[in-house]
Image (cartoon, rainbow over the protein chains, first blue to last red):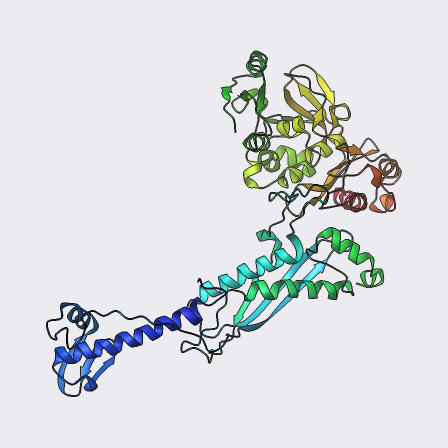
Length: 248
Length: 265
């Protein structure tokens, strides 16, 4: 059914986590047979199976091999192999949260908007790879800026022809449309999965259009501006607040 | 792209002969307009005559009070040229704003003006500077060369060889880029020479690059950004599209003209 939105970590990894727990349960049974001790006495820690009933130990690879060779137990005692599956139904959505601040400047003569600074503080719970998480935020902000200021599909009203049929007309955000993005992370583990993961894939794209348009409406002194807030749109919007523009 | 014959000219005379000998042949300069057009099958020349090896079409020289640039000189070469920077620095800046580095290392001044894209930068500079376009047949003044959207005074088989710019006392070009293509949505070139002013506008006019006479008259009396404030351009003669309607473009002409005058010093 696919991952939907930002669920690979929170839901997918939790399912893997549960499956691993089942693997350990079976591996302890195998270890019990191999060490010739009762299963309840077997412990697993830091990759080593041990038991209070013996001073012999087994590594995980040794137990895995034994699970498949099945010399130390019969098929009737335990089905050979070390393969488990688990499904996870999350008890709740996760709630990544954060604040993005966009500082921009409007050229009132042309309507051109220049984003001067971008500051983002996000809480994604447990991070797996902080560098990739920053990349996710960068990409999401870029897409959000595109939506707010640049991108729009236009169809000719009379013919239905797509006018923005190439990047010559469909304005994709370029590197020089964006400032350096300052990112800070605050990590509150998610309470509804054992890994504490909230997911981060959507934060940038959700926060960015709102941050940009809020900054624009703050600059313009009114809210009558639609996305994409192209130079032409912003120039016209700026005409409605001449006193504000002059005072700035 | 349809199949075509590729021919490499060794000289201007060779290129002219090849053009004449092949039906439906086109000259290939930098290729950044022609090749994409052929890939979209909007153009299907049966033969391409490549000018890239023709040495006599390259070169940037100062000859007396004229800056002479060979037709096959790339935008990157103009942008980096010490000769251009010392004689018409605004022209080097203009060339440095065309497209992106890849485009600038292939695109040529001759190719650009022969195409006369209504959003190109060079035509405005040539009009403002009163340049003369040299071909293998004659010399054509800029005012007569640019005749409309994508059209020039060049005859069939005529090859642009060099462009000669009289060095002005002041020149600058101010460009408001299309947010998507980065072509000039509106570009205004202003020049002062011999006490007179010339103002040329690209990107905005519905018949291509044009001179703004009212601004020229005002700047001729008083070379200052204030002098062109309030001088309107007829929106009825402007292009309208999703990036800028006619009224917006007409307004931007005033803004870019003031900025160009300020930049020219």
